[in-house]
Each structure stands twice: as C-alpha cells, then as structure tokens.
Image 1 (cartoon, rainbow, N blue to C red):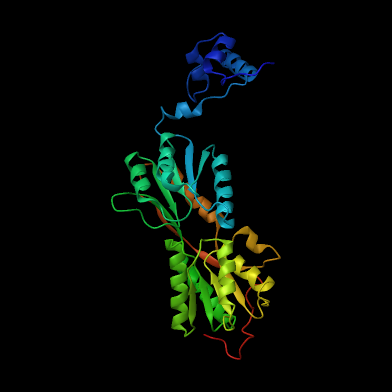
Image 2 (image 1 turned 60 degrees about the horizontal axis):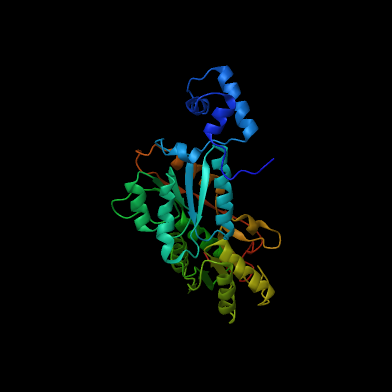
Length: 344
C-alpha cells in the first residue's frame, strides 16, 4: 500500500463507485435524494478509500458552521482547564467541533490570531476568561458571529455578546462571612495584578463586607493569576505575625498560599491560618489540599454556554448570572476557636 500526498476527494469516490461527483455530494447531504443502491456503492467506495467529507469547505456554503471557536490564555489554570475539558466534551456530544486558540504569549499578533477564527466561519466564539479585546467583539458583530463572554465585562457600545457571569460579588461576601465565622480578625485578599472584572468584584465585595464588620483587610495585587503569585503573597503576608485568614480570588492563587503557608512558613492550617479560594477546581478537593472554596458549577457554566451557542444568531443577547456556593473543606476552621468571641 503506497502513501498518498493528498486527501481522498469526492471525485475519487465517484470514480471508484461509478457514479457522478454530484451523486457523492447528495449521498452525504441530509435530505438529498439518492437511490439506496447508489448510496450503498458510494459508501462502500468511501470506506475502501478512507474518504472523509470536507466539512470545512461545506460550511462555507451553509448559514452556520459546526465550528465553535474557543479562546483562552491561562489554559494551565486548574479551573480553566476543567472548563475547557467539560465544554469540548459537550460540543463533541452535539456533533460540534471545537477550534481552540491559545492566546498566551501571542504578543503583537494576538489580534490577528483572534480574527483568524472568523476565516473558518465559526458559528460562535467563546472567550473563557480575562478581558475581551473590544476590536475582536466588533469584528465578530460585523461578521454575524455570535460571541459568548464568560466572566468578562460587557462588550463595548455598539457590539453585542452573550454574557455568562458567576456571581462574583456574592462569592466575595461568602468568603468573608466564612472567615469571620472561623474567628479571623486580620485578613488579606490576594487578587493578582490581572485586573479582570470578576476578580475585582470578588475582592471588592470581600473587603466591603469585612469593613462593615470592623475587620481590617490587607490587599495583595501583584503578579499574574497564578500559583506562584499565591506563593509570593504568602511569603510577604505571613512574614510578620497577625494575618489569620487569606482569601485567594482563584483556587490557583489560594493553593499557592495554602501550600507555602504549610510547607515553608510553618503555619498550621487551619489552626493558625484559614485559607479560602474561588472556583472549586477539581484539584482543590484533593486530600493533600482540602481547600475550602466558593464554587461556580462547571455543569451550570457548560449548560449556559451551550444555551448561548444554540441560540439563533438574530436573537437578543443572553445575560446570565450563575449562583455560587461555599464548599467546606479542611483549610478553614470549623469554629471560631482562635478567640473567645465570634466576629459577627
């Protein structure tokens, strides 16, 4: 058997089956008329030759393709990677194809890379995290490609996009209440310098809730949204006594804090220090971590994303705010044992 220098074409199948090229096209077009015998011969020839339909070319002649563009930058983030796995599996079950674009380190050409998605006539562009480039949103709007923004700010004026947001502010309040219930009286919030709206909302609501109850909050806003930022924050915040509770606005940050506090700073968690995160990434439940966290459900997020992808392109933008919930694990004290009085 010799190798081929090109894909098997519909013309190759037509020649092997003894039919016309158009008959092959009709055999692979739902609802098109072709006799049962002709279809059998075409499928047999296709099987023998290893023919696959050129769906990319076919999509150029359809109002909507089966390609969904998925854009993300921090794909190593535990929650983002779990989100991508859940979404891509769900798309596959629906016979839709995931076209992934990793924008990490794209540099000056990032905008061109993002725009290239439209060259493939994607039906929807899903942006997983961070700040959505305004120019890309406008470009999608001009080309009739629907956009789904997950935990991102609203699009610029004149552009439309579906918004799916976790209730970040409520999550910040839940984290504050849980640390107060653990007896924490001098806390910190680690936000990184990424400045995305969701992280800012979590940190702001946390600090405001603590302020209403007279609990001082130290803010750490340096570095990327990464495990290493949690490491650096823990080293700085815990170098001096006093901090007894830390809220990392993502699980990745919180895990950096947690592991550094235990292994490097000699802090007993949760006896000396309570740590709480946000996301409920699968790694947070590992017994070695036991991270208490504010969960945004992957199932709910995936379902909402699919709802947006399935919508008619002419339908008005979808705005969904998904609930969050506290997941109790061992990184936060179960009772206010550090002090005689629970901070209200």
